[in-house]
Structures are given as C-alpha cells and as structure tokens.
Image 1 (cartoon, rainbow, N blue to C red):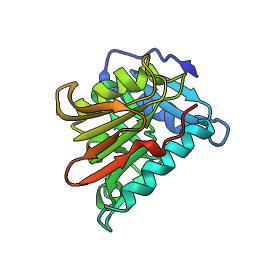
Image 2: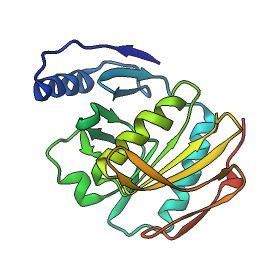
Image 3: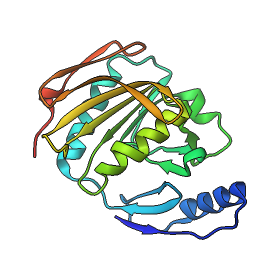
Length: 198
C-alpha cells in the first residue's frame, strides 16, 4: 500500500473537498483501490484470490435474504468526513434509493449502509480493525462484519453492532468454521466453514 500525504489549510471543509478531489482524480491501474484513510490518500493493489472467494461467498449468502430494492456492492465509496475517510468496503449492503439519491455520483455517506463487510489483507488488517471500525461506528453503520484472515490467534470473524460515537459493541466473535448469526433485518446464519484458509 502506498500513501500520499496532503498538506492543507486549517479549514476542515476545504481540506475535505481537496481530499475528495484527489481521490476522485487518482490515476491508478484498473483493479487497484484508492481510499482516504484518516486524511491520507492510499492506494492498494487488488486483493488475492482467497480474499475474493471469501467476499463472493458472503455476497452470495446476503442476496438470499435481501429485499429486491437493496444491493450488495463491492466497489462503492463510503464516506466518513468526520474521520477524514472514504473507504471502498469489500461489501456494503445499501438500499438502491440511498445509493442513487445522494449528492455525489462517486460515493455515498457510510451511514447509508445497513451492513459493511471487510475482509483483511496483510497490508490493511490494522486499518480494518481500528480506523475503519471507528469510522463505520462514527457514521452509524448498524452492523460491521470483520473477516480477519490475519488475526494474531488465527483466522477470526467479529460482528460489531450498536455503534456509539467511534465505538461498536462486539455482538459476536469466533473463528473460521463457526456460524455467525446476522440479526434483523438480515436474519441470516453465515457458516464460515465455507471460507478458504490460506
């Protein structure tokens, strides 16, 4: 992952606008991900195949329980200006009206998401565990599912909910192979035994 630090004037709105402009105009190879993480524009290569299979399996299961007017998106920008961030979650469940009805055509407020799923890569695990968890909580995303392939004690899954300021409550945690129950509006039991392990 590479980063571009941007020095701005003290005006936060002006700083945010500059960051968004740089993010929107970034020229990177197809498939690479450009995000703003804590005020720094970062560029990441495409994820590996295990990462993609995990995301696809969660994606497939989510569609089995979603209303027709909700989608699961893999390339949508989710903005959290209070945390100086625009992230591209691995999966974001967003009602179509919230995706299409916003002011921006390139990102949505993270608060529009009903669920965000992040699958860690070695280069981004810390961001997914700390910065993004705090940002999604700050935005009020009701559920955050972290699939942590590189957790210190081995591959793990954590379901966060009940956001308050920058903090989530842990609703459930376990290891690959366990079943996690996603609460309403999903009411879905996700068998993580279908996840490949590196």
